[in-house]
Length: 168
Image (cartoon, rainbow, N blue to C red; front, side, top):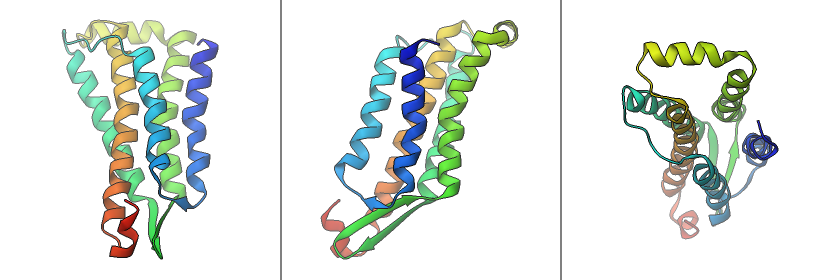
């Protein structure tokens, strides 16, 4: 892994620390994680392979990302205090975040340190056309996790008392 990849992965993992403090739901709550995953997607997502079973792999990991994101959004406390909406990730939301973001890093480390042969064998046996399919699947999984988590939090904030809805 390059220094940039390490920094990117660590920043994504450390976003969980920001979520553990209760804070006001503001546009920044949405923008920062979206910008980070957009930069990751722009940096690593050259194309979305469609050969063989690439789309099956991508769909499977995007589904995992959606499940983690929605669950993380539900395990994030969202409450109205006056006109403010406050959010705070609980322990379960934090674990789900680390699981989702950390799995990409663990997979990449495994691929670079002894797992490449097993990944190649799996890819051949399951008609996955190459490494770009794996890259696309994990990047889209991370993007989906972030978007669905934020979407879930946003929708939950919209269901609060009318005074709190002025922010959103």
